[in-house]
Amino acid sequence: MSSIGLSQYLLHQPILTLLLICHFLSDFHLQSQKIADRKDRDWRCLGIHLIGVALPLIFVTVFIPSI
Image 1 (cartoon, rainbow, N blue to C red):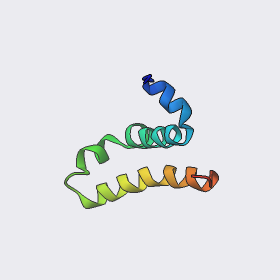
Image 2 (cartoon, rainbow, N blue to C red):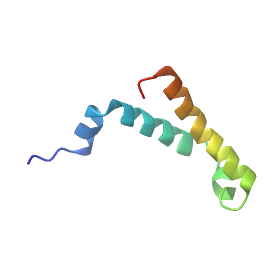
Image 3 (cartoon, one colour):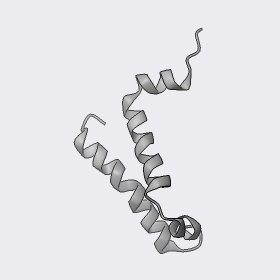
């Protein structure tokens, strides 16, 4: 049984790769430090975070209906 690396797996799974990129960008680049610090204590900040993660994923699924 041959083992493949993560990069080869992601190359063969482009939809998963795209969704991981969306989640990474929304979690680390589109989220402010204030939201990141307060989302475990404040429901509004958690809601803003959830919307910020959901919107790019919804956007991708609308434009790629095969997902």
